Image (cartoon, one colour):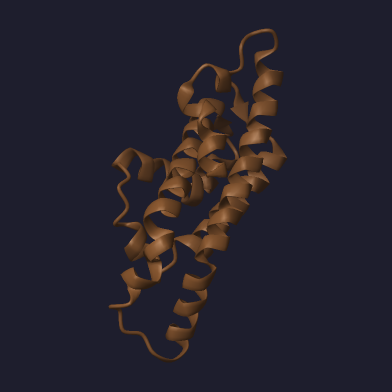
Length: 160
């Protein structure tokens, strides 16, 4: 399997991780996210994509592994849209915050759906770039993204 060292892919992964940590899985929203019905493997894949990027930066990333991570993140986006976004304010209403924290909490709650959409757009951009590289690497063979139903459902989950 081909190691991905593409600069555009690396930049996108960095942006995705930074956006996810800052705007999606921050200290205010994380408690609601942890109540989502995602399996441990999905959470592990998301964590690898968004937080452990530095480990793979120099050695490169496996294309099939990147597809799995993007698929897990797409599943997360789809679930968050369904399970978290509609009731986020109510879920977090029991937590007492005051002063600057209350303002920050209100800001992240109000921007959550927009930030989720931005995450989906970044993931979709990464997925499209991976597909381009996949076609180049596989030459005359069938690309990896066409071989797995898990990978072909990514865009549907991201586009919601």
